[in-house]
Picture 1: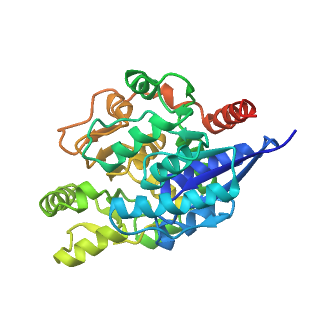
Picture 2 (picture 1 turned 45 degrees about the vertical axis):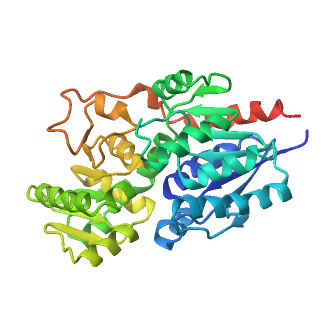
Picture 3 (picture 1 turned 90 degrees about the vertical axis):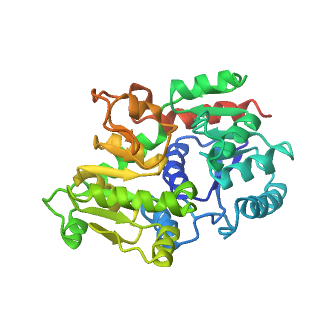
Length: 353
């Protein structure tokens, strides 16, 4: 039987993590030949290369280095470059993850030349169309043939938009990845010693979304919010390059926040295992906090991961407190989402003769 070729498009941290889990699962399917295309959306080595090294992601066959610029510029450059690659490689399908500009560019480049699109983490909605990520999700789902959803709510969102064919609920691939990371880091405390927080209460913070960093008034309010939270315990703030530039430009030295460079995947999970609070605007980190059973404050006005709010593990920074119950989220699965995805991809490709 001839092998089917998939090109997996990645460009940002959450995609590297999900791709690692599914690439491992693909190894059980000899009928699938996967190649990685890295758009370079995250061009800082601390935000990109370290994840490939730590997670054992296959070396990208194509690396584009197309980070930077406005959303239109970035997406347009990616669309043009990916089309050239797709025409040359002639893959049987394109695999995309999540909601970045890389996701949308991969989807559009493929569908315009009649290559099937597979979307992992389909159906998520924040219902805020001012977010670039929301537009990327909606458009990518509209052109995908196989839609792999993490929750029943994401399945319901697609149904409400008239998308029912090719939709499957598989659980959350990030759960698989977190279990892998916990096993790798459960006895590692070197970073805690280095930061001076071993056996001490502390919080972990990240902030990078344009909605927070492009609005000076909102950014100032968020920094003030973090400083207030730091009165209860020190906050380890892993600072995104864009956020660090903004702090320097505005001459802000946050009180009670220990600023560090972005950390590797396993170091981040070491921090998550030992902290007592997570503050973030990252969709992925909201869930990782839950998987570690740590309360999270999301520094956004809405979240696509509504299950974490309802289960009492997450709250928006504008809310007074968490919901009372601290339940489990059954939809996220048992840590076998990547295996389910790989099986469904294999079945899907068999229909594409």
